[in-house]
Amino acid sequence: MKKVSLSLLLLLPLIALAQDEPVAEQKSGVDIGAILFVVGLIVFIIVVRKIYESKNRKAYEKEQEEKRNAVREDFNNPKYWYQCKNCKVTIRKTIPPNAADCFKAVDHLWTQIAEVGNTKYLCRNCNTLVETKAEPVAENCPDAAIHDWERLG
Ligand SMILES: [Zn+2]
Ligand SMILES: [Zn+2]
Image (cartoon, rainbow, N blue to C red; front, side, top):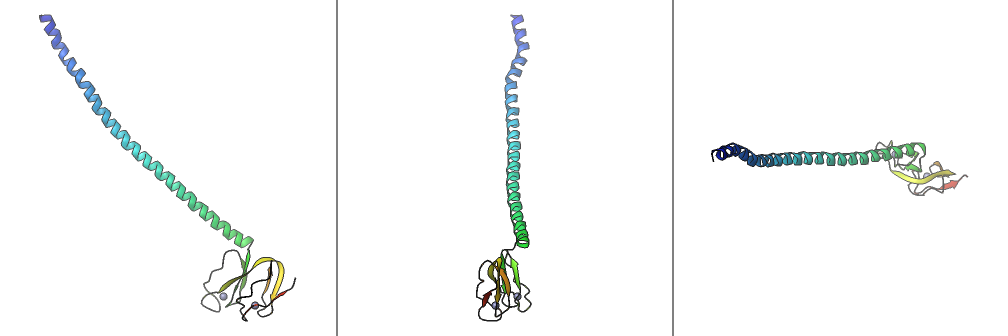
């Protein structure tokens, strides 16, 4: 009897430890899970933001590239003739010219008169000479009610 009770006494702390341990493990397990969840959430937010930012940046860069191309195209290979009714300036451009700072009025009054081409047209009223694909429009001659285009060939 004595032996049994002694061994039981020795076992008791072990039993208590054995019972405590899973509880302690469970507690720390919950903590790690919570930390992992928070860390995961932060990483997820960072990743999503990076993807969003890179998409925005790509869209912005694409827009800038398109603008640069348009300006280059406008410089190298202008598509249209524009003429100001107020100051008579006639230029080739793809992008419409700025309205500001006309020499004869507050603003230029630009008219897209024709597509750039190889046929010469001269206006008998305002002496504007342009090389176009087809006869330029008649409206907004600087020196008369309408242009009077003569095909020079
Ligand atoms: Zn002008
Ligand atoms: Zn004219």
